[in-house]
Structure formats: structure tokens, C-alpha cells
Length: 555
Image 1 (cartoon, rainbow, N blue to C red):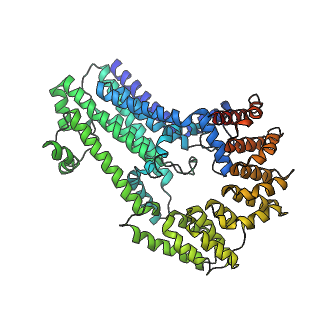
Image 2 (spheres, rainbow, N blue to C red):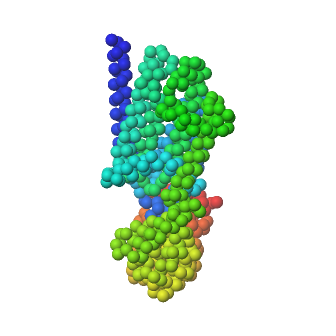
């Protein structure tokens, strides 16, 4: 009777723990994020909304050494995995795998600044993102099963994304907790090898449950929890799964050494993660056969070769998957497919009377990069002003300056008007051809026109614009002032030092920040003293920007 009560208690705890983990997965990110945002200070601006905000982000990153800290933490994370595997202290490797995965929680928050709140966890991946826009997506092959499920749902006009995610999360948690219960129950009864319940179908139900849970968490859709920015994270998920599988295989070496034939018999009758036909097992183990002449993963070297082989294979498969799916990663084999789809978007842009359809087509075309430049630039002489605004915007997003002469000719022939889309595009493209026209717009009574003109002149670093900018510097229009200050800083003419130093005393926080950024761009060491007066400023962001600007000037 006492034994039954103990089993019932353990099982009840397992079920309660499962329910708690499911709730925690779906709700704790919200609660934790809210607490962090109230407990700690983070910048309140959208770091990608303008070049000025990007400059502020750079100073913020430099001051807090975020990239360096991210790199150090990433190295420590991988060292934990390696040390754990080398020394057989596999708990260290598990800790490293969890650390690599935890930043995924940073996506499930709603903030303007991408490292605010729970998003701060993502600093660990910053070294990855600096390598290539592709690198963080080299685990996208893992999305294929989910894509199949969603396509099946579309046949019945049903969105299955949230339900799919919850099913994975729930089943993963349940499998994990029942596995833990079985393990505790066996150890409680002084057994050696766990063989009950889930251990009859899997030698590692806890690890399998963790993998399924993490996959479900990764799939949580936008309407369940808001993913901040288009920040891809399939590579860390893939690496985490491969590390967990490595740990599982290393554990089997330990168990075999410790329990001998008892564990070998258990291995013979129970699947590694889940049951598979024998022929499929041999196919999966083909690299071991290829490199070592047998199918046994009975040595650390074999395991590492096996895992390394599949990690590279899956990353390569992810690249192929991306090259088919995303035109940004097109290659010779997939180019024809993407050109056909691109032609459809071009036709929509040319002929559709629906403005929203044109907008979507233009946004899609920006993903085609240089492939779309010639077809788009050729449209400038064929389409009306409304369509050309979309074309110009897309060419600016693509960012290939080769189109500058075509855009300028279209402007001169009145095929393109001097719209905000045009000014933004030629600023991004650094088109110097418009310099004279935009200098004249500095006097425009429309504050928005003046702001965009000033921003453009800063992007091309127009020396001829310095005096017009200083002479027409607005005294009341805040956002025009910000544009002028940014432009003056980018151009870097010392004639503007007096104005910038004066604006360090402005009562408006954003004006002061813009003046600091401008002085940091200028690199004038004589401004260190006036910047030093801000080191005791009541606003913490101003203190950070001033402090880092002084450090940069000192260099």
C-alpha cells in the first residue's frame, strides 16, 4: 500500500509539473518581460527606424560592450558543451545546450528596442548575426515538417500554426516529465537501468521531450506571442538539437561502461529516440559505416564524426531549401524559378489597379536584390507617378547605386517627381546627382520636405550644403532640427561646431542626443570638454551617449 501511495504521489507530481511547464512556456515570457522592462532601463526608441537611431544604437552597444560580451558568452557556452563531453560531466554540456536555446525566448516580447525586456537574451547570438544574413537561417530545414502541416491546413481553410505549436509543446513537456517520473521511480526502488513506460519506446524520453518542446516553442506564431523584428534563429535551434543528441550518445557510453550487459540488452530492444525500421536505421547510420566500416556508435570519435556529418548536412540542406524558397539566396540552379516569380510581381506592379497589391509586389521585389534592378529601372519610363513611387522605393531598398543615372534622367524628364520616396531612395543609394536640387529644397517652407532634403545631403556628405543648413537651421520644428543636426554631423564640417555645442544645452532630450551623435561623427577632440558637462546629466541615455562619444574622440 505504501508503495502504491508513493507511485501515485510521484505520478501526480509529474502531471502537475507538466501542466505547470506548459503554462510557463505560454505565459511566463509575458510576465517576465513585463517585469524586466519595469525593473531595468532600456532605450525607448526603434533602433531601425532611422539612421539617427541606428547611430544611437551603435553608441549604446559600444558603451555596454554588448558585442564583446555576446562573443565571450557564446565562447563560454560552447566551452561548456566541449568540456562536458571531454570530461564526461554531461550536465555541463546540457547547460551549454540550454544556454544556446534560451535566447529564443527573447523574441516573444513587444518592444521598440530589440534588446529591451526579455529580448536582451538575444545578445548571445549577436556574433552569429555579424557573420552573414544567411548564417542564422542555416537550420531552416527544420521548418519543413511544420510547413507540410500548415499546407494541409490550408486545404481546409484552417490555420493550424498555433494548435501545432501547442501540441508540440504539450506532448514534449508530458514526455519529458513522465520520463523523469520513470527515472525517479526506478532509482527510488534502487534499480539500475530504467525500462518502464516511455523507456520501452525510447532510451532518452527526457531528451526527446525537450527537443519536441523546444521545436513547439520555436513555432509559436506571431498572434500567440509577438516576435520582435525579423530575427531568424533556426541555426541555434539546430545546434541545440545536435548537441542534445551528442549528449544522449555520450551518456550511452557511460551507461554501457557502468552497467555492461544489462544496458546492452536494453539498447538492443529499445529505440534510441523513437522506433524506426531497421533499414532506416542503417541509412541514418551510413556515415559511421562509410568512415569506420560498421554501424556501431561505440566510441566518442565515431559519435562526433556522426554528429558533425549530420550538422553539416542539415546546414547544407537548409541552404538549398533557402535558395529555393528565398530569392535573396538564389543560385544558378534556382535562378530561373525566381525570375519567373519576379516577373509575376513586376506585372502586378505594372498593371494592377489595387494599391495594396502594388505595395505587396514592391515589398516582395525588394527581396530579389540585384536580380530586380534592371527590370525595375526599366519601368521608370513606362509607368505613372503612383507606380514609379513604388519602383523608386524598392530600388532604394535594394541599394544598388548603378540605377542612379536612370533615376535622375526620369526625374529630369518629369517621369518621376521629387517625392519623399524618391528622396529616401536616392539617399540610401548615395546618388550625388541630385545634390544641387536638394540644396535648394533646404529653404522649402514645407518642414517635411526640408527634413528629407537635409537627411539626403547628410547621406552624400555634401560640403556645399553646410552653409545652407546652418543658415536655414530651424528654431522650432523639432523633427526638422533632428534631420539638420544629423546631416551636419555626417558631413563633418567644423564650421558647425558652434551650433552643435550650443544644442548640447537644449532642454529637449532628443535634440541633445542628436547633437552628441553629430559631434561623435565629426571627431573633433575640442568638443570633449562640452560633452563632459553631460556626464552628470539627469537622463541616463544622454550620459551613456556622451560618455561613449568622449571615449571615441579620445581614441
